[in-house]
Image 1 (cartoon, helix red, strand yellow):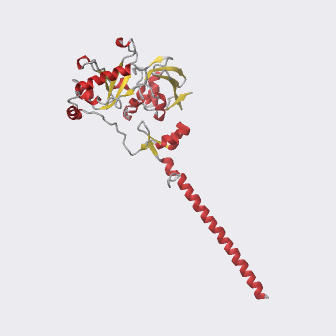
Image 2: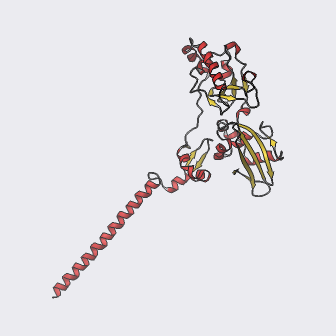
Image 3: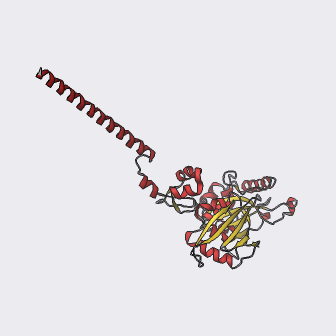
Length: 328
């Protein structure tokens, strides 16, 4: 009888131990599953701490954390975070045509000189017939643009430091008598030093309009131009605020940049700059309203849309910090 009771007790102990080991095994499996899920959530094993301190370079050449991008762009932050390159990579401007390329281009186009002139004039006429719009990238639609420039009498002056873009653009506040008074349309050759040359092809090479050099300070009115401004040339927000306060009158026109070189100021607005500049050309900038410790600027684009930007002093009376934001 005692042996039976003892055997029964041993059996109960073994069953209890097995159940405990079973529960322990379930716990281990659950912990492994949670760790695996956490790794996938953090992007292939990157810890949340590492991810939060990672920075990525945006269009303006500056690096931002994922949290900083999320604060500005909300639900769109995911796409923007995946788009930029890593902060360690260099951002370079591709030169499409340099003076060193002239010999090769001329040899390959020696029999096409007349054709390139005809092509250039035909393209100009075609684009002039279109309604006014944003600048048009010519490199995909003008096959012989390199040959046209390489065989131009002033090719060296046109190429300069190296061509980085070629666009057709309307000239603000202009009038073309040959186009019923419409705004004049020219081909803008942008160079790597942020200057440009305006071209206006004629029916013959001899009837081309004289080339017009456009200084870099005139060109900084599109997002691309602002993005090319080196960091050393960008104006800190507090310095720009001080400049504007010296001309603190409502509706003051500062488009020409004499009062304040606003493109250099916008270039320092970080990830807000694309929203300020938009996809169009900025045609007008005014000091819309002056308040105590705040200045509001209105940026008008070529399609007549506008955006209102606030520069506000924070902290003490010496304005040690200035915050920029969009006014809805």
